[in-house]
Length: 385
Ligand SMILES: [Fe+2]
Image (cartoon, rainbow, N blue to C red; front, side, top):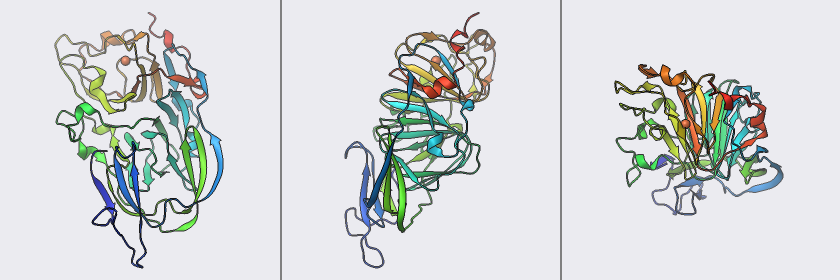
């Protein structure tokens, strides 16, 4: 996150003595990414963040692959995924490759008896249903319908829901998730032609500082394993921090669509990017205004990227038979395009109310056993006239 942010109390000079009222020292931690080259924050803990008391079980949480070389266009009915109590157990990976895991979850309970961090991946959550608070060691972020939450790797967090009816789309990215480079100046500030700006971000607030000792379970996801480590100090014991490495939120409803006289290509919807995939937001917008314009997209050959679309709300203009919570996957190697009738029907229309999240990956996606359980199996034939 290329904005400097700070919460709580920090010493005036980094790497210098910072003392408590009883004259004992706070413990400084540099929390960085990409070695010492990426974004980092300096955290000040009440106690050492290294006080492991026990390393208990390690569970294999890696996705089970059902189809590793896919050529089928797919429709997955993610609302058929049954709700589950626990946040981590509720997460169902659907599509994976060596760069990311894409999944959905319908967790019913807040995380209370453990803490969690993903040590291997940045996480991107999209909130389709539900609201609550993302609680982290660097502050809290309230979330609601339509919010993206970007959680950098290593960030210890708990998630608290207001109700039991929650639906999330999630991504675990093994390379850092950034804002699109084309929208940033040389210093990192978002430019005037960016579809959103710094004011739209939800930055961490209300830093919780728990100066407590006891037995605190931290579940750490690393290399597909879920390790259970017990710590002596409360993980949220930070008294203050500053820097650039922290989670943030962004509402899809604050994405300002870029429109034109003729059909604009998917890159105008780009919201986040990594070196391995992009995330795009398709939001309600006015249609193309050339008098002869065809607002529906042309057929296109994503010959070298897989295209996954998660339908959130509204009537998706180029598709028939898709509903909120559906995922379509159009694999690399074959063209795809509007469904019969939608191309013609779009002519003369003034606006679309569609809301969807698209993820285009540069390497092919494999399908998991979880995905095959919610596969409609017929979608690839849905363009036949
Ligand atoms: Fe497409």
